[in-house]
Length: 357
Image 1 (cartoon, helix red, strand yellow):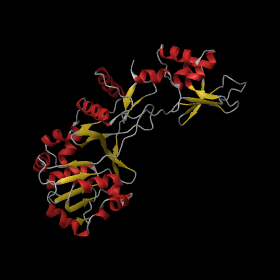
Image 2 (cartoon, helix red, strand yellow; image 1 turned 90 degrees about the horizontal axis):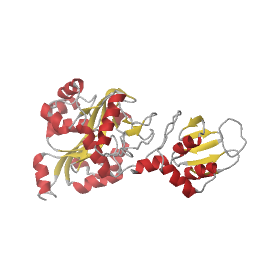
Image 3 (cartoon, helix red, strand yellow; image 1 turned 30 degrees about the horizontal axis):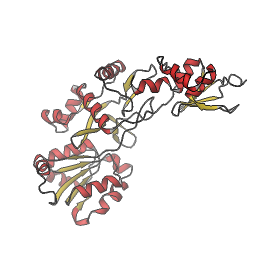
Image 4 (cartoon, helix red, strand yellow; image 1 turned 90 degrees about the vertical axis):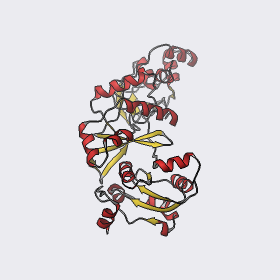
């Protein structure tokens, strides 16, 4: 039996359904039902916490965990309750919106799921033409692994079923969650996936939206932190290396040689800059943490760093990028005057400099 099956069978939602406790209403990750231990009115004083798998009555004070609730209501021991619960199929149906966050899996598991997931997706003609207009060739589009995000629910469920048929467990994978019918699906926004690759593995999936929203936001993470059995995504960085640089790294040569670096505040922007300049290009998701900044400074002996910021970063808060990274680089080595406006990058460095002047 898989961990998720055991987890569901001893969950507070399954216990609620096995005991026939009728839902009154829900708020956040709490479901309110009528308390079976006191003479409360039909208002729903028993709070079922779907994250902690616990219960608490606001009226009589009875409290405990899911297995204990099942044991008390059936006048059996906790051990007997556990054995009985795991011997039967779980009933995870709920008519109310509730949140149950899964324990996020290891990064190795997440990378494997994402890499398999991307193989099941395609690229629409609409997104293909957008990428062509942005300057990517057919071979580059295939190489970088851009994929369109399916929108129809039955298509998403079918894709998840294929993953499960291949023995893949979606429990705790950011972006995936269970819908109200308790079927595995995934978050879908109108746009396409940008695989975020570090050390030759897909660490996360960034979504480039078809339409901007909220202060010129064009890119978000593939995440399901607010969904049932969902998990949150991490803020990864990405380092794109020219072929010659990558070979030198593999041979442990020129590790301490000063390098010219291009820095971009978004991933699609970074791919475009990498195509233009063919230099080491570092991409971050609008912000950069102190830990990530330290990693970059240790990894590279920077001769010069050219900084490109997208409009969303400028509008929101570029301060972390400055404080955590750029303030630690000598002024003579950095150029932070170059700011992308409307994501309009010219075809050559010289043309861009003339526009920026």
